[in-house]
Length: 193
Image (cartoon, rainbow, N blue to C red; front, side):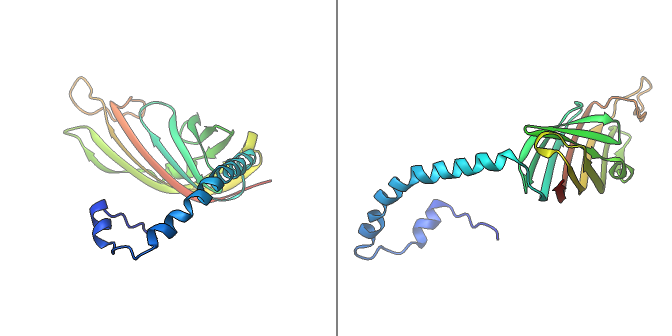
């Protein structure tokens, strides 16, 4: 359900005048809430700490942002949360996610086969590629020992190719791009065991 965000002036304009005694009833609970807040926060943080000890299976969502550097930044939400970087192990086939609570490998070979250019401008040497495909998770360490699952990933990459001395765009796979921005998002179910 989307959140409804209203400007403060809208909120006060739509508020009706308080009925007699409303203010007194509302403030009567403040001491109770103030007394309960420290216990609530401690219980919440204790629960968070124990949840961080072992990853749980279920649906996860992976968000990755990359540039021309070899390591991309990852955030995982859902059944467990973590963050870290993706490091290439075998180019266009296998990445390792190095997260704060462990690592696991991501087989990206099937995804890479589906990535194709959607636009290319030889006048500016700009290119945009997109793709969607499955990635298999395995070889976990730390909190991710025994991880298995498939994440369906969508990738969009935009880049600027370098120019050759002739002025033409260098389209060689070994050419280092002038700039790259990659946005990757995926979801899927993982299990441990």
